[in-house]
Amino acid sequence: MANLRFLAIRLASTIGLLWVLTIVVFTLQEVSGADPVAATIGNNASPEAIAAARERLGLDRPVLVRYFSYLSGLLHGDLGTSFRTHNPVTKDLASAFPATMELVMFAFIVALVLGALFAISSLLKWPGAGLGRGLLFVGSTAPTFLIGIVGLIVFYRVLDVLPGRGRTSLSDTGPTGFLVLDGILSGNPALIGDALQHLIMPGIALAVGPALAIGRVLRSSLLETLSTDFVRTATAKGLTERKVLFRHVLRNSINGALSMSALHLRFMFGGVLVVESVFSWGGMGSYLSASLPVSDFPSVAAVTLILGGLYITINTVADLLQSVADPRIAVA
Image (cartoon, rainbow, N blue to C red; front, side, top):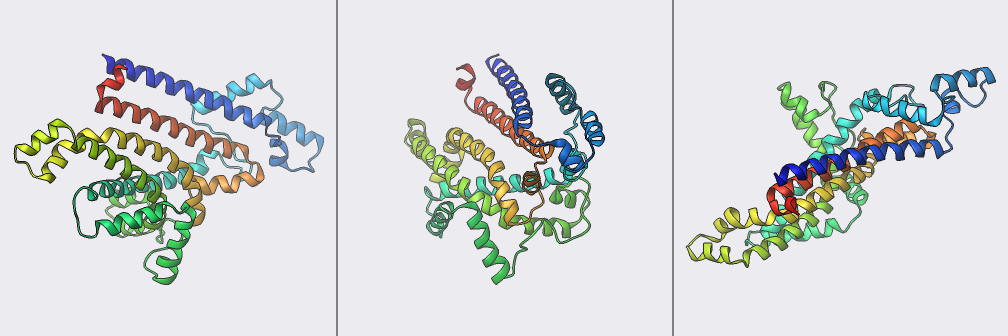
């Protein structure tokens, strides 16, 4: 019952925050000073053309009417029309959104794996674990764009073992825009391998910093759990160190790492904008970079709304997962 109440409160809060986000984005559009008419038909248009464009864009209506029209459009999946490309923004983002999501999801998995290896290797004596932890620590202190540039120089220019630009070298992709998934669905191992090769450098550049943060929190939680009575009892019963760690300690130490993982997943949607520029990725970051200089506000607003919505949704999912792992959170 407490979990259902917690779930209802979090969902209501999420809906409320998303609604507030639409108000913020619409207000920014109103006060930005950008002239949609000039962006659409140019600065030298006749007064008649300007008046017709204002009517067509709905700018002659009161601001509240325009807001509710904007909100209605959002609810129906209409993000407006780009001033730059003159396409519906949803059409422009049809390929950019999967590109960004695929990169972030790949980087998140890499961060979880590296973080877990960092934490566990500090407790179990594995060959080369110290070197791996050292490299991860050094990498995490560098800016994301610098890791990406160093990766390009070493693995693309010098060693020539990884591709340096874009998402794939192949022309035959697939319907979903998630290239690895498309390769799996179509039974195309060449596409899977090529897409994974393109993901390695930008994914690692995005994952190094979060991996160390997640690993540190998990290591601290593991050490705390290892000092508890039930772990000492399990050890006294004759279980090996590895069995105690994997069967008993990890499950009771995962909460803090879960919170840190969710926090850094949210940050990744900010960092991915830089990584996409370095690797010419063609996702929402590249779309935003092209839209900002020409004040293409429908495009900028759409990317802002999507990233903000993802941030809020991830936060809610993390809270729900924590309540499952530790029911005391839901009760509180």
